[in-house]
Length: 432
Image (cartoon, helix red, strand yellow):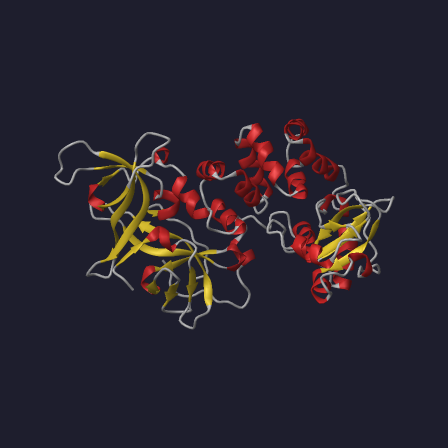
């Protein structure tokens, strides 16, 4: 392990125990402040495990840190949820993007202004990891010009620890955008409300839409209402219609109307329709944008369609076949073809000749219990939903069922500690 490590580069790296078993991913590093002028000490890392649990890993238990992974010296861990102490800060959450001033090397002259983009820690003779270097991007004050990045000794940096209004969001956003949406959502939940809203607003519309779909409802609402209405409508347009409908349902009726009116009509239409169904039914949880093709389409065309990267795995797992038009509500629904069947058929085969017709379609009013029973009985990841005219109006996917079958707060990090203790795992002895 090298004697200097840059902390922002550890974000999202996997953590392994000595046996090579994965423990979780690095989410941050913990800095202990000192009452003297000595550099702050890194006392440990914060790792995220399964069930969205964040735990503390003492830095002394780390045997190696490189560009690929962090390795621990023991598999015995304290599984108590991490909580930041009063004399501690988190590097990525609290220090990244801080605006600081850099004193001249000789202590004279005008101090330069800059934005913190990374912090380097080094191992001293007492086996303590201390912040000794700060990577700073020069602050130019101009929107069209990025200042150059350089490193300075920690003792030349002023304002690293101070009021939060000196902290921006660009570098934290850049780190978050390297994560999966679910991991980004977890990271946002760990930020103070004001910081979370600031970082969320700095994300692109597409990224913010993906992240909102992974957040608890109260966080979704809080972030959305902090945006101006035009931006909120743009983000809603980029969400899956069923997720947008669920989010809008949490807002007052007047606000729902305003945002739906601001959305493009072709985007707002499916959302309005989904909101018209009774909660807890197939109509209220289905996606209105499954893969639909006509019976004269070929297997090759169907395979090309489900390869499109914007499709989620569950949506791409099957093609629904219906008469034109190939958008909900479609023409007469004929049947479905699973992607595995597509892989077994000649590319020139016609979909109308290989469809499955023995699965009874759902109705919009079918309840969740019945949907779950049918999907479990036939080992399906999606089921068609048809109206009284036998038109396809959507499809219920297994992730829709799970989202609405779990407790409403299942995405929330703030659940009682004893309710989330993994069964069969004993806490370790590395108490802080």
